[in-house]
Image 1: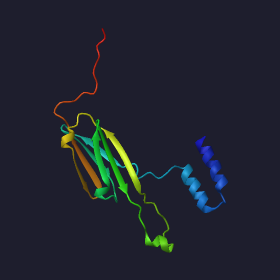
Image 2: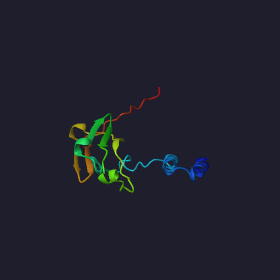
Image 3: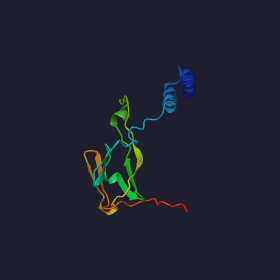
Image 4: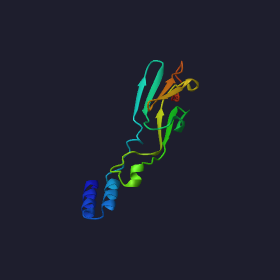
Amino acid sequence: MANELNNRFNELMKGGDDFFSNLGRSFFNGFDDSFKEMKTDISESDTAYTVAVDLPGVDKKDIDIDFKDNALTISAKRDSFSDESDAKGNLLSSERSYGRFTRQYQFPNVDKDKISAKYEAGVLTVTLPKTAEEISNSHKIEIE
């Protein structure tokens, strides 16, 4: 059904104003969320979890990290950019994205006081040491 709707919309937009045609197609085909996805690698060892997040073009001061209720939250902001060639009409394509982006990850038994982070070459690496003993968030209830 979605493909049929998209095909009909594309037919409707053929021959129309290019601006509105491309705007409509990008809306119906989905948005480019490549930056918003925050490409992430997560690894686990016996002693810690390690999270590596690609944040190209983001300043260190524009990254916020929080850990609460077993959830690591990473927020980043990339300011809008200006390109002089755009003012001259020379910009042929613009695929860079900007704005505020947030992602959350769940981790059990983390020693929150020992979490560390570093940002180098566009990659944020967060190390979450595990607690010595596992903290259980569940409680088994016996049936009488």
